[in-house]
Figure 1 (cartoon, rainbow, N blue to C red):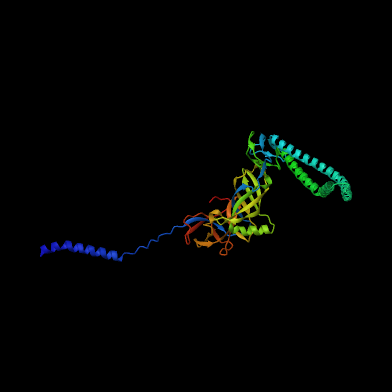
Figure 2: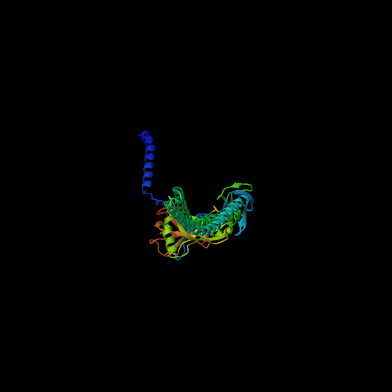
Length: 419
């Protein structure tokens, strides 16, 4: 008995220990649950403020003109001198190209000779007319003599004092005299039409002579207006044909900025033009400020939902604007309704901003009015009926910005800050 009790003690102790451990674990106090803290993104906010501001549109265009002035050769000839180069600025009347006048001089001399010949023909025609009038009187007298001679021969033939042959000769002479009188009278009657033909020919010759003299003068080609030489297409010694282009000029007053405008802004700009209100555009070219004004629109749109606008130059040194230069300009749109200025970092896509409510982001649809630079800070003007004064807008750039994102306001956006 003593032996069995000795072997039962260890199992009893082990069971007691296990039961005690289980009782203690069952009665221990429970630890409070650990809550996982959600991450909040630090942001800067901007209060909503409605203002009356003029929006602007960034345009990308090209300096161009639809009215290049071409200096052309009026007649064929050889180039004797070329006095300008591409890029030169020339005043009105400045000599550009000198042509050998030999060909033009020969043509002028030929036209002058033809004109003088026609003048001589007209003088001869007038003298012939006066002679024809006098000869008509003589021809009529000769006709009377021929008629009397025929009558005399007929009377003598009845008394057999002349032969029948003499009568026939007298009749033939009378017919010939009548024909001569008719021809002379016809010459007198045709005089006005012949003189008119000569006068018309003289007038044509005078016109051709004037053209030949102008072509001779045009062997020295000058600038028709003050402008800049765009292209010189000939060199000394070249042979050119009539109407060949020698030099191309651009007139500064005709230089334009051709830029594409999104269609959503076209109607407002067109309304301003209809009301004769200027729509300006400002561009910086090589550090210089140039001002343009919208003049007209293209007659057709392109596939990118835009239309070309033509802006005439209103301020700036046009002589320094190179054709074909691509420039960036800001077109100032007319004053719209009250709008909200936001920095570029606050705009998501083209139609969305985020309002901060209870430390979370709420997406708001907006209408983009245009661009506006405020105190050197680029931004946009937007409109939305879902925003009211003093609403807080997300001004930071968050790549993870979505509806309901938890945020923490750590700063107020100030104009001029770099976000």
